[in-house]
Length: 373
Image (cartoon, rainbow, N blue to C red; front, side, top):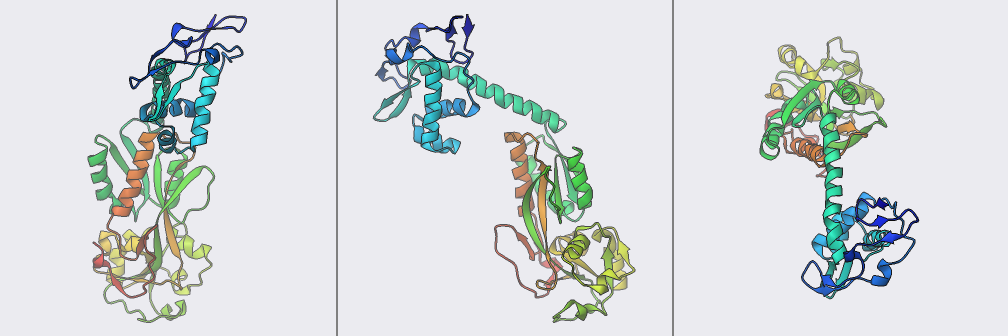
């Protein structure tokens, strides 16, 4: 004799179903206290598949309908159509050979059979969530740690906001911020040395999940004393301006190269740095400009400089939050992802930086770096 794990129905070796007393159609009280009875004829049908495997959607449909006493509310909660949810319930009832719900003018209530099945359904759902949580813990190294690989221009700006959000909403989570170039950050995520990354100028990778967060127009960061044209109609107007150039693998230079931007004053510069933050002291000393975005202008080291966005002359750069597609996306990891996204949007960026899904920025006027709050 075999036993169905969810329903407790005993099935003989010849396929006949042996129903327990509560499955034989005996009258009983429903979950809300209303009297009701099971369909005895339906419960005694032969041909019930004793090896029926219930899906997680079916189990969640049963739980949601039982708790809301409404198929329509349960469907909305699970983001299903009502016919789809009703089909889930019917498939379970057909497999078990019992009615799980009774209809009433005020909605649906569990039958006696449904009351007996519900606790086991909840245990199965909890076991599934527990398995996801266990895998997520192994995947994240340990519960309560977030390793975030961020471009060196992004990390310092978001750190205070992200730390505060984690402290308020996910106490005990240890943040390890890995500051590096965007290309290195991608490698950290792909090699599982970081759970998430914040990168600019991303090339499509099928193994990564991308969420665009910021759009930053390229322009010029200019220190005091560096003279630039006040009204430029082409990049050739900057031919006499001295520039710092960033190495080829940085998001700024890669963006210019990918868009085929012809900017000799920038690309021919003999002054080369691996990152913008390392160039600020020399820029002040030598009165040299740099091509950057409002993200670079948001760094504390840029205070006192001026940022000139150049829409129409230079492209924009998009910052993405990345993680592995094959990562287990349970409630814990998804909440961490939301907190990182929220923290990026809430951080004090230069006014030229557009938080995606907000207003488009198109002003080419001179914007003092100190203006960001």
